[in-house]
Length: 86
Image (cartoon, rainbow, N blue to C red):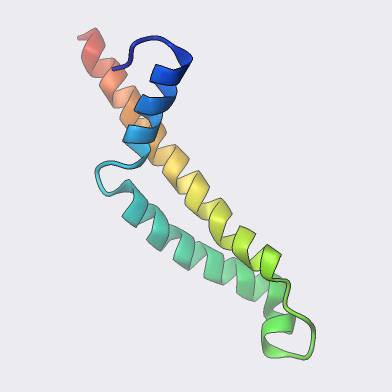
């Protein structure tokens, strides 16, 4: 799984996060969730006269992407760890 060092664990976690279609699935989850949240949180600005907060819009897409990626990578890491114990 990894060599036991912090750098090795981070490298393995990164490899898991970038494998098996995780980035693509995370992107689509973030697209759906981020759009819904932006409509809820900034609907007045998007469809009205208020100013749009682009920083908040960016974060509203980034957070679901990060959560989805973290969750999928965590599952993959647990699967590999369980397989190594067998």
